[in-house]
Image 1 (cartoon, one colour):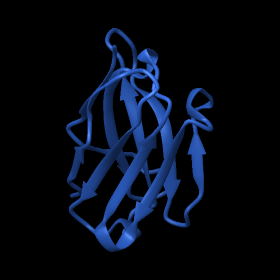
Image 2 (image 1 turned 30 degrees about the horizontal axis):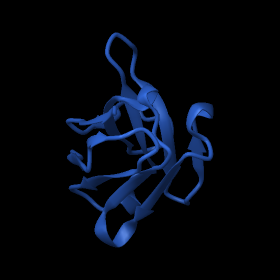
Image 3 (image 1 turned 120 degrees about the vertical axis):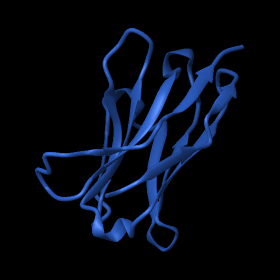
Image 4 (image 1 turned 60 degrees about the horizontal axis):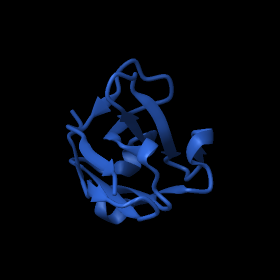
Length: 118
């Protein structure tokens, strides 16, 4: 079992920045890949960014150059630095963990709300 706890969400003005954190209950070095996903009202959950055990990152086209995913193995924590936020970035952001390549189960956190509004 992997438990994930997100934090760092909130209300921010357009153009502002936020850093989300995802703390895992196990060593994240043992997890193949971790990622951030988001779900806006009335829309499906979508991938934002992922990072593998080896440090390979992948981003949705909509956030490339704007968001940065990183991991701190010593703290068992994954971060999402979000800059130049736009109203369309408003969503619940979820942390996900894939224990192994092609894992049938993805572990999820409870989500953290990010609202970009003036």
